[in-house]
Length: 378
Ligand SMILES: Nc1ncnc2c1ncn2[C@@H]1O[C@H](COP(=O)(O)OP(=O)(O)OP(=O)(O)O)[C@@H](O)[C@H]1O
Image 1 (cartoon, helix red, strand yellow):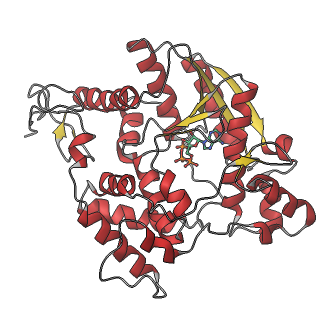
Image 2 (image 1 turned 90 degrees about the horizontal axis):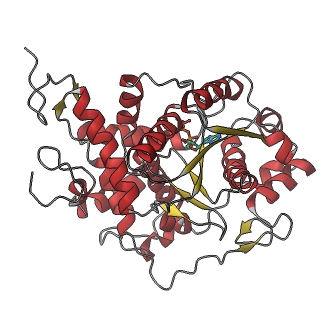
């Protein structure tokens, strides 16, 4: 016989919460899911009353749930925000064209303004054309760099100064792993920020920083939200996929692993001797950049001159600089030529060293008062 929900002890439990493995009812799941995001937004002071906030809307599960949640919380808690959907059409036939149809329906369902901008119009290249030029191996780099800038440009066009995206806790933990694997100290030091301000004009934030992907999928399912669920045609070869598999394996053993990695990432402090690149503006397009040309302009020049693959990602710093940050393992010789397994071992050691006062910080008090920073020890 089904047990009662461990939170309300009234309704039957119908799901096991991925973040905590608690057996709870649908009503309590909605309550804790929404409350944790509200707590993240208020505790991080993401918004000010009157802000025009652009929601990066791809039509996928994360951004669809984000649009729905932003609307719900804005109305429920009277944040006083103006919410606008912004979609970037990368030009991927059979993928983005279909998902954009979903966003157009979301616009009606949530009664929000929608703006669509395309790579073809902004950069003169669609992703289908880029993949023809560079092949499938590195195309995600082009897409990521162009999308980031396209969202900022769209926000400026819409006279908004804040972009929210549906990056979730799994995405952030994966990014931490990838930055460690690549030895990218500069990105590692900022990828855990819930809000970044790349450019003085545009803030970007991730209200789902502590929200598990599995819970987003469950929420979308139980709320019967209209979203598009196909994987990008070009992503299966992405490097991120390997970090994702590793993370899923860790999560299966221990659900708190995702928050643990985020917590570890937050605790990494750069040694003061590490020199990070200075931010200035791109001499060509004016976008924020640490070099005279921004990454998008470098990639575009490569595409336009037929040497696209030479303009690809170069790590800011080498893996050896891992010794400069405070996760270094006394048994680890940073000068060794590391293989992937060794990278994961360093990370695992770092995660284990800093186990885990954080889990409680980012869960609401589930059996008692419902507050995130509750000290009532439930
Ligand atoms: N084409 C796009 N237009 C607007 N925003 C986008 C687009 N692609 C991604 N984003 C934003 O960036 C976030 C992370 O994108 P990512 O590519 O990791 O997709 P995802 O994890 O599958 O998210 P989603 O389920 O929303 O597609 C999305 O949630 C969304 O807010």
